[in-house]
Image (cartoon, rainbow, N blue to C red; front, top):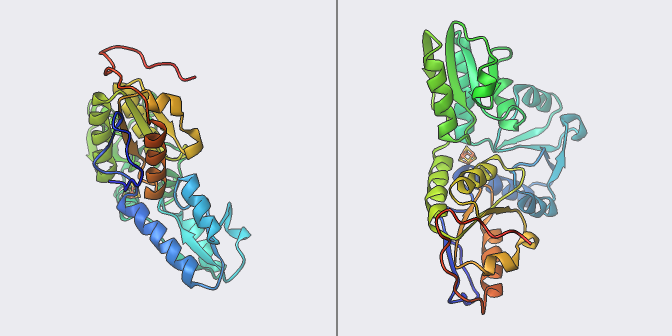
Amino acid sequence: MPKISKKPCPRLKIIPTRSIGFCSGVKRAVELSESALKTRRDPIYSIGPIIHNPPEMERLTGMGLKVVRRIDEIPRGACLLIRSHGATPGELAAARKRGLCIIDTTCAIVKRLQAAYRGLVREGYKVIVVGDRNHPEVQGVLSQEKGRGQVVGGLADLKKIKLKGRIGVVAQTTQPLHKVQEVVDFLLGKTEELRIINTLCPVTLKRQEEASDLAKLVDTMLVIGGKNSANTSRLFEICRKVNPCTFQIERLQELDFRREKSQYALGVTTGTSTPLWLIERMIEEIYSTGKGSGPKPRRKEGENCPKRT
Ligand code: SF4
């Protein structure tokens, strides 16, 4: 639960989900980065952001982290932070060849997904990866063993694939359970041998469940997290399904004070890469600008969300 220093507006009720802020994987990645930035003399680089939260990345780059797009932009002998989504074997080999020191912040759950994929491919399965093909985590998984994996975003993609022989299924760690279930149900009727390895992140699933439950009860639901964060976007979709008054914001400046203060019960959830300092600042702002707003009746069943002005 975030610490709030300002006196809350008595008429405005802010209800956060039970779990909020960094997950263990992101916490570890940020702690390893901070410690390297404080203690090492050589410059520290990452290929792409180490986590998908722009305000937190700005804090880390302010401490000296340099974000580049390719390994060859990193000077020889510098230090490379592998982000929580992992790296491709090609990137790792190139980093070693360049003599870079490697600090691996890949989350253990992502490593487990990579190992599950490799295992299925080596056992001769054609592997369906449920996920977003452009996400670095999925790219990192496919690059473990080339040529046997096929990424599907949902049933529409799956229907275009020739399903022959032994089929294995894994999923990007932040995919919603129902999407994976849909894919598995479809495959059950089409394949002779189907092997499913559950690679979904339990932390993400728990947060999705908590967010959905809370969104059903409140007037407005606020999802705080990076616009480039897959798990935050997922939370937003899930909450909006059950509460049309759901908004996603990344930065303090995006808070719509008129909107937030006009609501009586405001639910708050966050992506797993949203830092606590940002959540606390946002909640303080909402409380302070909510002063003097009158209590509003709870949104009735089926009533539309007030338009954003
Ligand atoms: S969301 Fe799950 S898989 Fe992703 S970094 Fe956090 S703990 Fe790891």
